[in-house]
Image 1: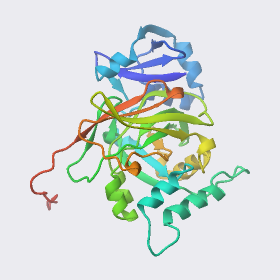
Image 2 (image 1 turned 90 degrees about the vertical axis):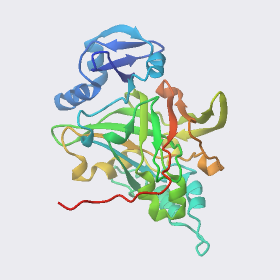
Image 3 (image 1 turned 90 degrees about the horizontal axis):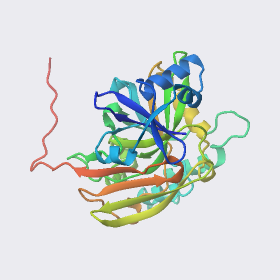
Image 4 (image 1 turned 180 degrees about the vertical axis):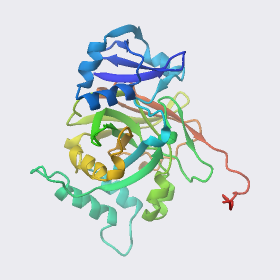
Length: 330
């Protein structure tokens, strides 16, 4: 089952479900956040709950996207209680891309390659115990989450704005303080790769950018192997296109290990919160020497996730003279 939501004319979020080609409004006024949290607290199955509610009229998701009405699959009514985070160096092939960015003339192996090898050796433990912890980063809260078909803003202080096609897990925290996975969705983990390349210690800065997720959320287990395509359109022309692989068959860490090392921290198990956790990628247009331009459209698609995730790049005009952020004394 694929779930999505859009903004109704009365301003409320409307849940949409589809199995196959047709998408239908779910017969509820609850948002997907409200329904998922209720399922977590009641011990109910999300898919069964959707089917029990029933379906209304058919909807055209592509038209809703074109009209700018599609929403991220799950939102929190208070954006400060939605957390955008991710992991890197988790996919086979990701280390070579990162290592090239962080190459050291005085060392035969970069820190990135060492981290990747740790994942290969201990990221998929067989005995159910926690494996080696991955690289982890913070992107922001719900204010940084961009809707499907929305614009990803490259701020004036940024040096680059590039796509990262990924799979994200979306979670709610139940009243018992435990995480519950709502499902998986396509994600664009938009980052500043030029800044990161200057020094790997700038990674944290480079990740403090917007991100997009959706438009549809896959309920149930993640396929073992996912084959998708990342492309960039400039007007009517496709100026970049490359396949990407995800799913555990193409990863050095298991999903369970990545989830453990995120939710082991008590601050990420606050009842009612939403988490969007991105699992990494090995495909970047930046690694191919491509530089996106203002107005380019990022398009990420994989068959298991329904509609592609599309977002236009919007480069904020740089001021003639950079203005320092000031802090006032109270």
